[in-house]
Image (cartoon, rainbow, N blue to C red; front, side, top):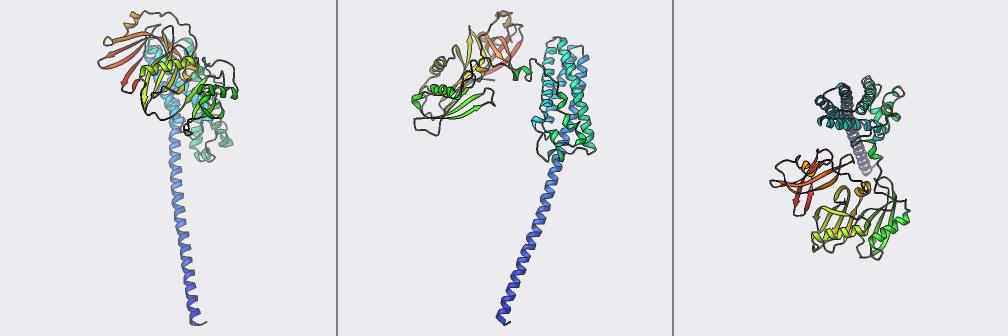
Length: 463
């Protein structure tokens, strides 16, 4: 081997050694990174397990508190103590539901348990209101409390067994979460088939409660009173949408089919107008039942405001009349970017039904109706048998704050948070510089609600 060949060989060896050093260095870096990642993952898993443990054992404690306070409510004899006890049930059950939602199991797997805790919380609040008004609990109320207590004892027993299995290692959060948030019954070992897999089956025979509350059984199953008529096909719904927008304005109609997941199963259409603006189609939803307009919206630029609020109100009422929504009265509105959104409520013989609500969006440059939403109306509208008030207008006024300067008065039907209705006297008034709406129950004189009226340059709102 001559000198030149020796130099080349020496250089090749250096390259090989350098490459080997790089490879060894990369391996070391990968090992270090792997160790760091493993440590971080381990720390993360530990943090998550600690959070799951906290949520679970808080759930156990709050369910035990619910059971104790429900037991106390069954033997309470005074309205004052009853109201206090039931308020505690409401609070503890609500907190139990919060911690239940933090356990790494999907909602479907614990839907019955969540429903039970929601109803316990809401029903106890409903009964506490009775006690606050010095109303005695009925035998039905007491029977319902007894029923809730029985199920709560079963839930507590199941949770206590789970607590033992968590402590002795029979069940681990790693096992429960390794397949993702699937149902308990698919994740637990055979040894725990009577615990986690049965937590929701405690309520297999639980029929639920019907009462004046947000989680009452009647709400999900409530009849949509304004949703009348026979089912329509997609083609029929498309024709209704075309008539709503105007066939002479339409270039193309695309259908998204039937959506059954919402409050009202509807056909949805995207309508391109022949005005050249393909980026802003009109969206229209038509109910499957009866072919009612559920929703319509069109966005476009508004460059001027020449329509007055009074004229916009009139345009909206005429539009509603033409679409089969008569006797609607404008209530509150909000202006923004050249568009006014007006709330219209149904009026029957001078009684305003705020439950039967339709919202319209009107352009202030040319009065075009750009949007419409009728869900409240379709859920609630019916011709009502409005009773004669049990108390007079003057008797209702006697329940008002003496500082309220009354500006207007009338009768109204107002909604509750649990989708029932209350027949009231409505008083609009002022105290100092603040405007109010006060609702006094026309049957018994109770103060049902107070709203603050907010007057702004862009509209009138309530809260």
